[in-house]
Image (cartoon, rainbow, N blue to C red; front, side, top):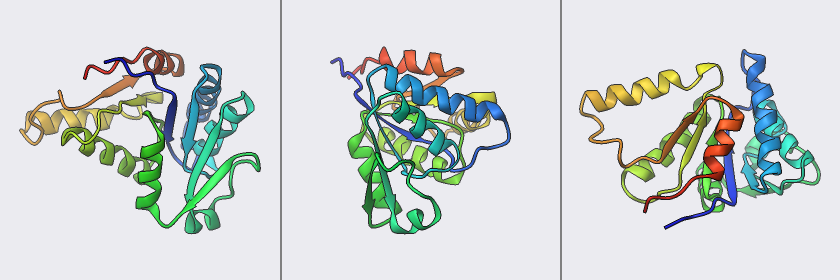
Length: 187
């Protein structure tokens, strides 16, 4: 069955990280989201890579929705007054709402929050609760060590098979967007 991706959730850092390529690629991903007619949902903050990708998507015509909490809003301003930011009760509700709104997930470099969001989706894939795909942007090989950890888990028999996972690792924003736009669900 073919499933066209219409809305992507973007998970990434609320900081810029060490390398300027992180911000450059986040900006380009936002632009490509818009130019390919996709809608975007994100964490709602006007900071770091999160703010960069959302601002670029909005500037280029995408419909962008933020999902945040009162606590996060106290630390991070909404990206733009034209972005609808829905306030939910807590971080778990935020993740659930973003999951519900998205057809797929784009993962840019990030920290513990990003890792938490990714592992939730991977767990849901593993136990069969979702087949929504994940697309990692491996800017500056940021996600290489995470990929190696997954392979170590497989080799050490903590993961039975990789067949349960719908994961794409992409080296450039253009490669990532090609993968998103050409994705076909095998189920």
